[in-house]
Length: 262
Ligand SMILES: C[S@@+](CC[C@H](N)C(=O)[O-])C[C@H]1O[C@@H](n2cnc3c(N)ncnc32)[C@H](O)[C@@H]1O
Image (cartoon, rainbow, N blue to C red; front, side, top):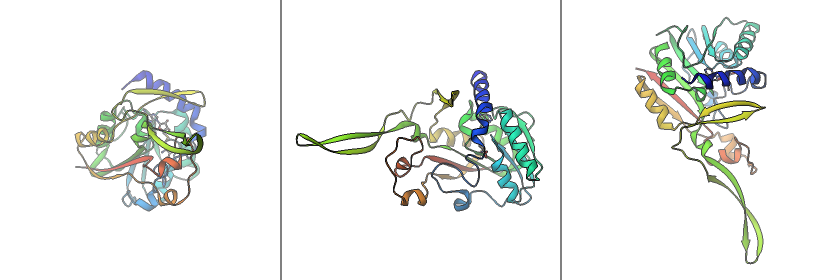
């Protein structure tokens, strides 16, 4: 794990917690992709023990409780997020056990205990994907389900461009297109700012996730690379937004993995 990056991200997530209240939480799995209500990736949660890695404001844990989960566990690097999740679940009348710790660290979490371990839009923050996925395997009972979602790696590799097309000696029209401006092979750290707070991430290949799952003893049951019908069937303005529908019409903005511990 990279302690300097974790410290910086923890501080920034503490500052950002309020603006991420209920953002990207079940039944949403990602951006412009079908929801859990449509995909049914989660097994029946009735009476099950579940753990969310990167539980944020606790909205996904609440969704699991509403769907019958009996034991709710969560971990998150941010103290602010943990306090927010604790309050949300308490106010909703659900008991939960939450730990403030990075997903790279497996202290505190019961081993071979959970029926379902999941992460909705959090796994990309790990500084050690192999350890994080091995940790998830160690928390699950044999046959347990692991589901996680994140940005599709192509998203980091493209940009939008609007170019004028000349007809004869006059400019007649504009062509709006997606260009491949990044490097899919590059998994180096990069830093950006959100509301003035620095955050550091790595973009990872689809194969990096699948190989880490295989190395940790998982069988991959499903990989979702889809755009929702709702987005595909509506007209999308050309827009340079990172999660623009214009892009979603050409490739999935998020990817979801479902695996079973062997
Ligand atoms: C987009 S939010 C997840 C939202 C969550 N699914 C929900 O339902 O509210 C991402 C979360 O990952 C957490 N995070 C970032 N880096 C982490 C790390 N290394 N270990 C654990 N959590 C981390 C952040 O604090 C943040 O709460």
